Length: 121
Image (cartoon, rainbow, N blue to C red; front, side, top):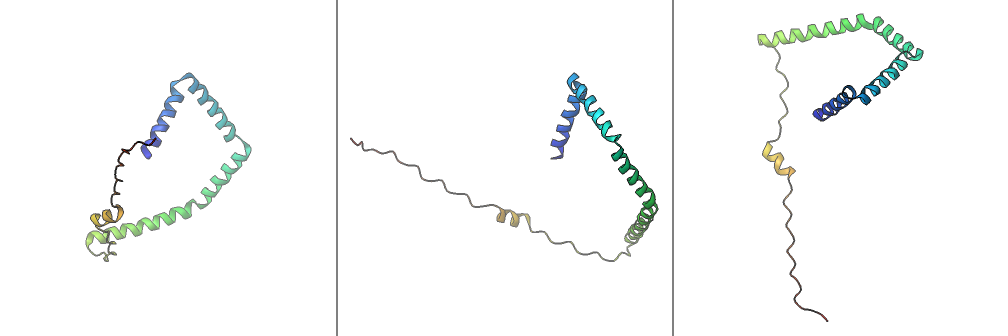
């Protein structure tokens, strides 16, 4: 699915940059995007979002730092062999078992009909 999406995006980009019509459409989309970006309502929301990030950045950085330290200590313990045994992985059914349950028996073909031999008048 990802390959199909990238292919379609590539076609679009090729169209936009490869044809005169595409270039005109690109300029039209660019001017519309700039018009939206420069709208005062959008800029108010941009300012609000950036203020929120500035206020909460130290808390986020502290939380990330704590979690990184925890993970690093777990990795060090695992390398040293001191790690507590982890939960065993759930057993997966064997491929042959899953395949047998997923397939249906083949349907039989109906018998061929014999042509009528008697002519009716």
